[in-house]
Image 1: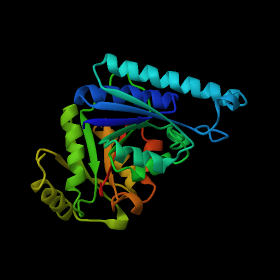
Image 2: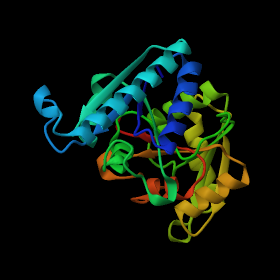
Image 3: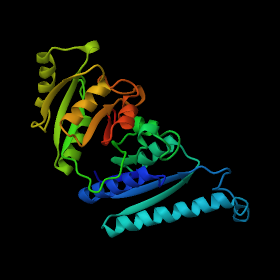
Image 4: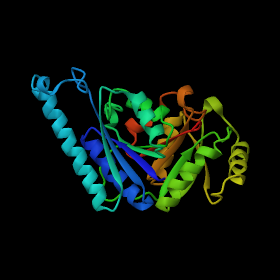
Length: 276
């Protein structure tokens, strides 16, 4: 975890992501980039200086964004971190993906407004950023006085080989000195006997360098309910899941469950692309 990206729109939830992203960067001694996107009514990049005065509101918004980004950069540098800031115009989710690849970001921290859905952190396609990002994405919902992660729930069917993306979760858990709890949600529609479910999880752990993870089976009517209730039962600080990017979420997670978990869960969600 050497290069962290924080897309921000300077909203309250983005401020929470900024704070936590800075804490993580400090722990990992990472470089950190702050990215803001403005949608302008005209091609601002190619607009002449003379014509900028015709758009006073846009000009003021740009000035404010530059100030906020500068303040974030200064804050990071005061913490001893290398920081960079980026202001883009009229770009969408694909531009963020390209930014991640070009700058070789290996971690993204972003905010969510919760029950209102994943809103425009950096545009209207934030849900797709979470689903398609080549780097792990940590979604933050609320501000906290001190960011501590001691218990992480990793939910999966453990039928597919998710060891490679799981290494990202291990890296984060090690950084935070956190315990990982493996979770299989046993549902009526895909019921497994306890012995079979445990065998799959134990086989997973045989290849896992984090062999001290706990094994847990939780009965529930659906994935979201099972993950949430189990996380609450152990007072988890975070839920980690893996995605297939363009093809949606792996078997344990039905399409849209990432967004649903973010909307209805108070704790952070860490999403890792299985194809990254």
